[in-house]
Length: 215
Ligand code: ADP
Ligand code: MG
Image 1 (cartoon, rainbow, N blue to C red):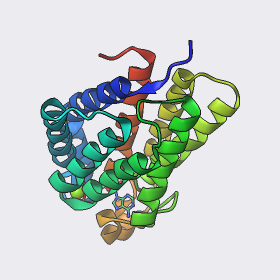
Image 2 (spheres, rainbow, N blue to C red):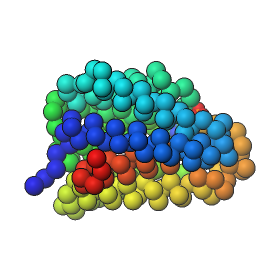
Image 3 (tube, rainbow, N blue to C red):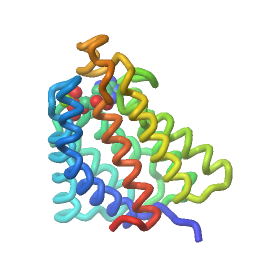
C-alpha cells in the first residue's frame, strides 16, 4: 500500500527530529565551532524543543497549519541564519501545500521542492557554496529520480536521505561562499558544514519515520 504523507507522519517526523537534533547538538555545535560561532546545535535544539511544545499545546488541524506552526516557531525562536532559513523552508512548504490532510509522494516532492526554493531565494546559496543547500539539492534530485523510476515514497525518502548525507560529507573540502563560514575564506575548507549536517538529520529522520522504523 502506498504510504501517504499525513499530518500524523509529519508530526512524528518533527518530534523524532527534535529527539535526534537534541542528541546531535554537541556534534553540530562542534562543526559550527570550527567554521562559525559554535551555536548551530543549540540553535536547532532550541527551535525544535519550542516546536514540540507548540504541537503539544496547540495541535495543528491541517497540513498548511502544521507547516506554518513549525516555520513561525523556527523564525521566532532561533536567531541566526538557520532560524530564518529553516523557517522559510517550512513556511514555503506550507504555502505550497494545498491539501488539508495528506499528500501523495509526488505532492510531497513538490512541497519539499517549494520549501527548498524558498531557502535559495532567501539565502542565495548555490550548490558548492558549503551550506545546507549542498544537502538539499542532491536529496531533491534523488527523491525525484526514485519517484520517477516508480519507487515508493519510503524507498525514495531513503534515497534522498542517503544523498543528503553524501552531500553533507562532500562539503568538507569546500570553501564557504555563504554565511558566517565564508568570512574564513580558505580556512573554511577541511570541515563539514553544520547546516548541511542538520539537513541530513532531518531527511534521514523523515525516511525512517516513513519507513516505520522510528517512533
Ligand atoms: P549562524 O550562522 O547565524 O550562527 P547557524 O550556526 O545556526 O546560524 O547556522 C549556520 C548554517 O546555516 C550554515 O552551516 C549553513 O548551512 C547555513 N547557511 C548560512 N548561510 C546560508 C545561506 N545564505 N544559504 C543557505 N544556508 C546558509
Ligand atoms: Mg552559528
